[in-house]
Amino acid sequence: MEGTEVLDIARDALTTLVFVSGPVMMTALVVGLTVALFQTVTQLQEMTLTFVPKIVAVFLALLVTLPYMGRLLGGLMERLMAQIIAGA
Image (cartoon, rainbow, N blue to C red; front, side):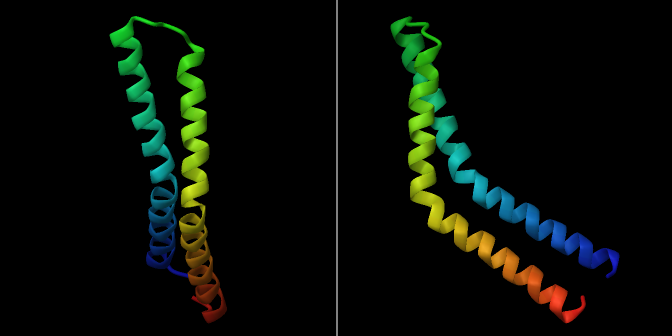
């Protein structure tokens, strides 16, 4: 296996990582900013108020995007196994 093939595998893995983690991270970001804005407007500084909505939103985002994540990770594994079998 040459250096270019290793770099291709690493690039493919990192791209898959970004696509798998992106929806959940963006959901947490949007909910966090929304809660922070709500806390700023109402001057309510409760620490637990930031955690509960974020946890619920991330859980729902995982439920919704789990089939998408499975397809992406399955595709990555199929490509890796094909390269291993081909002797690349």
